[in-house]
Image (cartoon, rainbow, N blue to C red; front, side, top):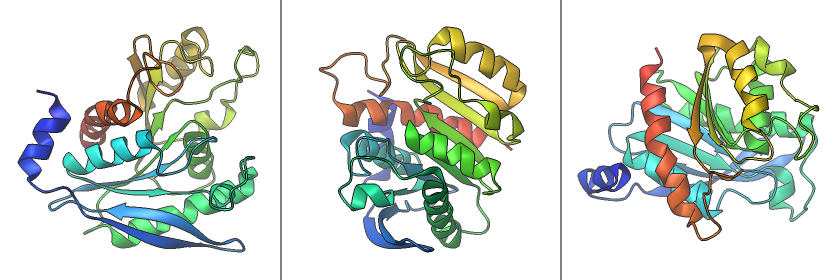
Length: 234
């Protein structure tokens, strides 16, 4: 029996989700979904990738599995996604949105519990930029980090990672064209003890091993690794 399913049985009842607006300065409201399981001792804020919003099955699967494992979650949309645009917001807007969502999670955290930042692809990279610019996340969980454009491993986007002082977990497919092992490996090694790489053998950019994989199950499947990592970090 998978770990996530065991956790769900132990929890007995799915964690209720609350849809809420998140006020982003100079932008307006964006959509968010907050869920807090009974006895939660950690929180994680989760941003979507460039091509799909917070209600994509991967995002839902990961978030709800984290709830089953005792972690409160807040997933949110960037402004362009709520507006129905295809092109992602520019970095300043994305970072401002990240900070607004993070502040909401901190306000709802219990007793000063650690609040982490996570994201799929674009959402994860913007999380790391926000932390580099001062967002006080307890750590970062990357769900497929876009280290370089596909087919262009020479264009590595890693400069800001080296100024981060928090723990980072890279959940990365070994067949991810946005972060080939030959490029990602040295970056993680250079980051030293701050970074941990968990490779998904045969996984693509969305951690899928096959086009037939259910993205909800794929997202849920990596939640135990993320939750365990969050609890190991002091």
